[in-house]
Amino acid sequence: MKIDDGIISKIESEAKARFQDLGPSHDWSHVGRVLQTALAMAEKEKADLEIVKIATYLHDIGRKSLKEEDYDHAVEGAKMAREILKNYALSLEQVDNICHCIETHRFRSENIPQTIEAKCVHDADKLDVLGALGIARSYIYLGETMDCVIYLEAEENQASNNRRTNSVQEEYEIKYRHLPEKMLTKTGKSMASERLNYMKSFLDRLENEVQGKL
Image (cartoon, rainbow, N blue to C red; front, side):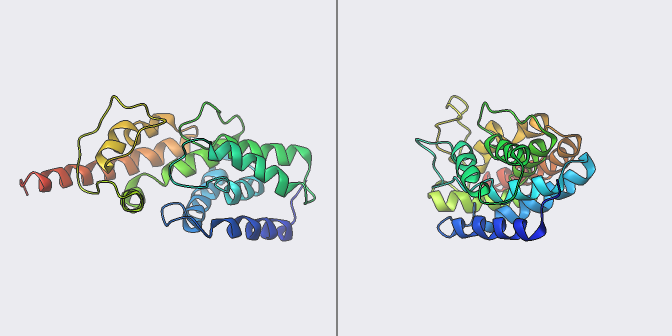
């Protein structure tokens, strides 16, 4: 069943209204970037573009803060999305798929995307932390949390679900460099590898500058 453009527009407006209090690393511009990537990916992967679009609009509505200490924003977001979507003329299958996309998009989660739409949203969201965009966004994030924005050694022994990020270098070692292998679509794997190479070259250059070699 095709979803009316007017419905999609109203859902977009509802989602956007929930991003007023989030900082620039996770604000509505993040949603816009993920949307462009997810739709381009969905076309190549032959996914349902309408499902991907709605799921992307709603994927971060459960986020309350940067540091999630007692909740999972993906799980909370799926619950909130289901309440929003019940007000629109969508089939149960469409609602279930959208909510599944939201619930499974988080990197540090045991919820694995099963539909091609969920895989596209997952991969597009992850790509926003890689490449030139990822570098810019990572330093914005570290500024928001008042952590080190220059250089600290990665602390590999920290549990990934409760550690405190101290630098882009640490996040690269613990998370970013593993992302290409964790992508769930062929398109995502290719894009992640290219973006990761760029990020690695930047961090190598940064380390040389910090050490006074350049």
